[in-house]
Image (cartoon, rainbow, N blue to C red; front, side, top):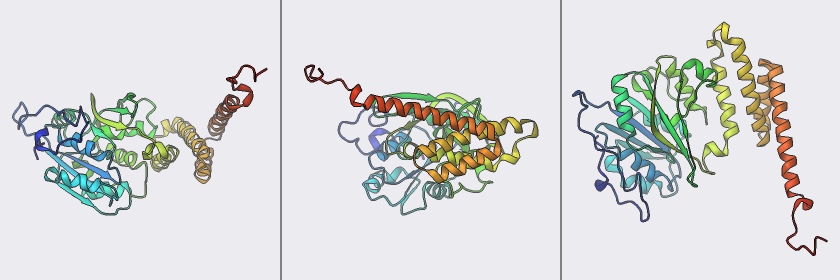
Length: 347
């Protein structure tokens, strides 16, 4: 499908401005400069009760000006206004459905069943594509078929704060080493469908790190191309799964990476063990601070088995830092540290 123009879509809600409400990407010609057809890019948006954000997400995908888009929305049976919003954009969707599912990974797998493009990613219903992202991705995919295409992700919040994350040095080995020399941020990582077709679907037993798992599996088969341009906008807000459950997210990354421990070459195994034990101990500490005692215990025991010295040192360092922060917090809230606004009462 060729992306629609802004005038073709439903009017933006009153008061909305900028990208992707009243602005759109440059409209591209039907074919690339060398006469080739633009690669088909398939995007799935899994969603559940994100009515406050999903229209912005949909418009950011549709207003790319790209000639060969396949866009799929999988709603988990939302009880808010999400289905009504999705229905307004139905003419430009390759497929959509609203019905209960078993979680995010299951929703993405349902979307994957309808994907026929060459490059794939999922964009969550509180995130956006950057303006002109599909042109950048399509050009890269045309010249590097069958490879992972990685772009920059801009993380932003409601206060206007923004930070760039570059998906750099993304290899199977680096992800197993928890990206010590690079970084990974899922919205900016587009996967080749030819490789995905040969793999099992996303692991539906995972609630947080299904992206790490599928990207690791793809990178065992192919390599990645890194782009300097921003391709996705990642929204941080208090109700997001990443914000609410970050310790569990870190713990699940440990679970995923541990599956591949036998892939570590013997020369690198000692260093990997130390890095993994330290990361796992940090995950355990964060889980403990959030009251996830059982998960913290499981992660700490694994870390201790891997490298007791590193694990104890890391965990104790976290405990000491937490104790210091706690003491400072108590001192700030102590009555003796609160200045009385009435000087006479302070005498």
